[in-house]
Length: 294
Image (cartoon, rainbow, N blue to C red; front, side, top):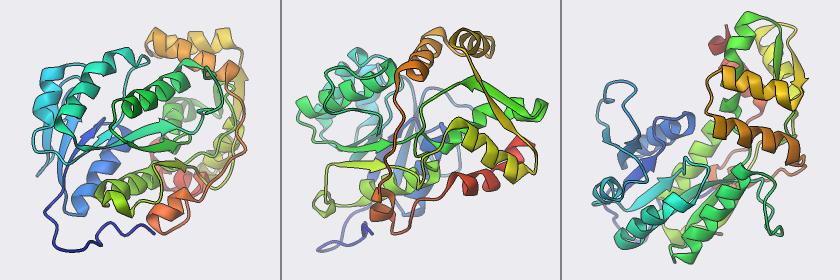
């Protein structure tokens, strides 16, 4: 387990900027950092609710250099989630990071193929481009390549409430990882001294490789219902996602991912290496979140 509190002497309170702080993962990271006594500044695009007690936040866009510059004042480390499907608008952000010189922990994806000249789909490509951009700028980021987050299953909630069939595009089998484990790992890295880390890149996975059908079956078991997954052809899946209100560029990227991204067979012990306990199963996540689907 990475001991984030061990040091050669007294340390001042860490000040950490968390981007994407209103999302499923970002909220978990903020909670863990605050529980460890860090000063946390949340970067959000808009306030969805009123400010959380004791929380400091910056509202704005990561592509706005002035907002980023102000957000970085007094910051020791940044947890970076890049929200766009294009890395080009990140150049100004990276310039501000170079100027402020915080430690950077970047959330990437395990789907990156380091041997490929081009990645399988736009979502993976933008992560590969962001990793390269940060490295080329000399920032020496710690990269957390996460597998599919279990919290993505929340997108099925309306279908589960309406019936026993969850439909969508067929996607690659992956070692689905609980976002709470990713948050624990991220907090450990953000709070640790850089020389306490044994690598610059961690691959965070769950303990088993699952298909969409496997995930839906686990969710059904948690709900005690006979749920099943129905794979849709690309055209039908596209129409469904557009009707749900998803932006067209994201829908096209998701369709490309469903058609091109290969199945994964990889699991790692990196969650345990950073947190001191094995990664949780998706079945456990389904039990813990069953009420959200009822």
